[in-house]
Amino acid sequence: MHNWKHLSTSFRRQPAGRIGLSGITVLTLLAVASLIWTPYAPEALSGPPLTPPSLGHPLGTNGLGQDIFSQLLAGCRISLLVAVAVSLGSAASGLLVGAAAGYYPRRLGVLLMRCVDVLMAVPRLPLIILLAVFLRPHLLNIVAVLVFLCWPGVARTIRAQVLALREQDSIRFVRFCGGGFGYVLRQHLVRELFPLLLAKTAVAASYAIVAEAGLSFLGLGDPTVKSWGMMIRSALDYPGLLWTSAWVWWLLPPSAMVSLAVFSFTLTGYGLDEALRREESE
Image (cartoon, rainbow, N blue to C red; front, side, top):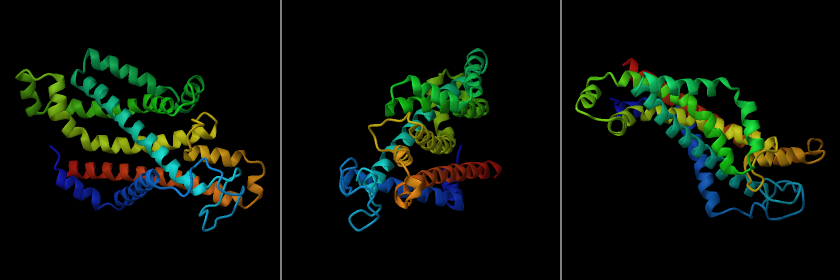
């Protein structure tokens, strides 16, 4: 049984965890703020093309005259939405498959793990591109593809934990009294696996942000939404951008935001892993 108070204290004592959580908090506040207020509509032609940063346009305008700061706020909302959807989807799928494989380690567990092995053996990047090409370029399809590729790693980790948990006296007693898989999962396993799932969701979120930006950069993202990846693509598609100073306020901000998001989620996941290891060692 996890000591939640001790686990929380151990996480807060780690600089990596605090820094990562602070970054996620800032990004969340920006995403919420974009729902309430942006200087201009992201698609609105609010000024002359390639206007340098000013009071009216804090990050200038792009090649169409759209406000980059407004698009950056909207992109924060979209990128975090993808990160949350992919992390939750992969955590839920990985939990169900991994818990079932660990609870029934013989026939069902072997079958499920062989499927996991096959999916993990396939190179991710070519498969992502292949699936994105054949599917309609929509945000929901991108989320579905990323969930499909992220859950096997979660399932493998969860299975290893469930194999150990099912041998605990409390869970063996529940099974002896007739408690089924669903009951044990809800009442016992989820509570024990929740900290590990948090760490895995943080890692999946950072991967989702990078993957969505990469797909948008390759022209396989959803063209109807203004994500950070789509902003980077539109900047690099502009002829001669790197020969002007416009790349400083057009290309750098979305690139920096992608880096900040990945850095924050990665540090948070690392902090959670370290807190779990410290609790197990004590």
